[in-house]
Image (cartoon, rainbow, N blue to C red; front, top):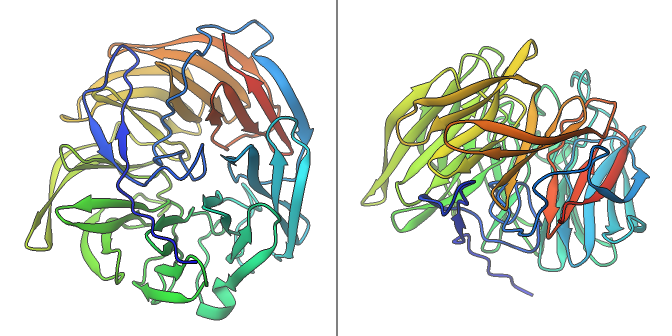
Length: 421
């Protein structure tokens, strides 16, 4: 069976105070929340009817259970949850019943930690699964690329990216989450000649491998510039665009910090043809304008600002602003920056590094200390309405929201909460 999937979904940015003024184009919505960042890879949800405030004990807990370690976030499709975890030298891809958290199927494979890879923060898996049609696609900490039947967990095909293609893992293990376009599974890998690779969704056959990108943590995004599609990727030294059909480099713009660890995913404003990128440390944030002329992409930097540097977290496009938790281990600021000018609207102290999502005019944040909060974000301030500690271990996994149910992962726990009124 041949799939044709085109990344031409339009992302609506819902302002916390009204209708949004920006329009983004990104990846097609494949299901309820079936890829990194949700339907459009921007952590924006169209859920409605969420509570304006929580009880002191937090939202109603629907279920909670133990799960192995991992930073892989939860994807949701067809009443099932899909994620990944590690136990010893084995990795697991698992399907859970969304209503009660019970295991539907589990797929185990051997995944010894690669030599030289640093495990100070995580032994993985770090990447988030992708669901397309009846298949689920995953990338493990040691570079095992797997395609399974989402109903049964049966293997359709797999590749050892290090063994077969001499891919080079990032310092902290493979982390980038794959994206699909038409019949292609596009994976940011890393290494000489295999910085980015494309495989046939059905057969797993290699379609192309190109570039020498290294140390990749950020996840790719497919955008349309002019009449053609290209893959945008933030690697350790620059943000780049490559031809989606061939992997050939179309453009590159420097974006590098002192650690060469660019993690946050780019955001694309299709209406203004603006691309937003951010990273921690010296890199900060910048917006680039991409223009197509006869198939050639021209890149112009609109603004750059080092005060908005988001490291381990993500950024939300809310109204005319970009909101993220910027800072360092010593302290972070919940920061809003004007998407068009790069001017800071506010920087509020007292926050830990946070993973964010936006729904129903609210921002839901899970910080690295395991605190879940509910906030209103206007153009002038960030107002926390409710806060509850749910995990006692370090937490760097972005929440997932489908309808009124929020799915969260701690170090060894997964749970579902009811955020409805």
